[in-house]
Length: 184
Image (cartoon, rainbow, N blue to C red):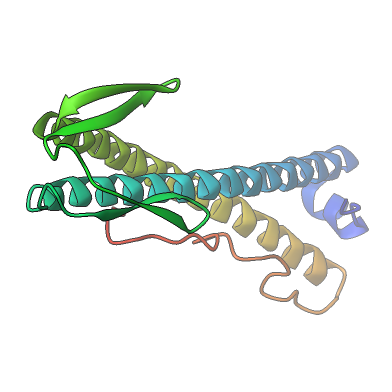
């Protein structure tokens, strides 16, 4: 909490104005913290979307390549934790596709590819929307941070103190997030 200084009351004209200024600073500080929390959550969500997009791309690529696969040839099937079993597919035309809640349906490969394509499109729309939210919050947070820094500089000058450092907090823009070539 930044205490009001005598200079604040003089500049603003009254102790009430200084108290209002202090309350405004406190609101901005709380708002800035909320923005940082939102950015952290959105960056996590962005990472999950990226992983899902990569998974869908691998599935589509595998199904497209599977068309060229010889029916009687063995392949390695991942079972988790970097563990594989050898298997020979009975059909290269049928695909088992999860549709949610642990339910799996058997589809022709082209239909499965179509569904994976639609899912990919929806994920990309979600990624675009998420990126827009991130940009909006980063801009709003930067505005609040700028107001707080301006107030801090004014308070330091009024007290005859040194200029503050550029910022003692982590930068808001980017938030350490990773964007791939699909980001817009």
